[in-house]
Image (cartoon, rainbow, N blue to C red):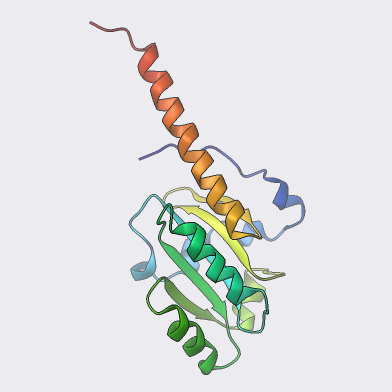
Length: 158
């Protein structure tokens, strides 16, 4: 398991005071939906958001390189909204419908919203664009790989 740097003071937090509610996002997700991978993506979208559908499509393109598990929490007003996402995206990710009250509890103020999650440590990074989340993850993996190589160099042989 890769160590997770503390990115809790990301630049987004000054604009998003709601991260306290989201930091325990695992409590809002059913256990059967939580990925078994170390890292995964949580997107939060709304069926009434014109940027959300293209945002998810963009995420799928960028995520094709790294293949992270993906859960989408979809704020919906009616049941047919869930069907639209499920039909279009098939089984490319898990779609969990939430109502406006749940979005308010999570203090989601705008959509779409993308979060890089770690299975044990919760939120690693958050962004408003899919490209930013994937680039952050790729840089994190490079950093972890470099740290592992550096630590091997420090161990004396013999």
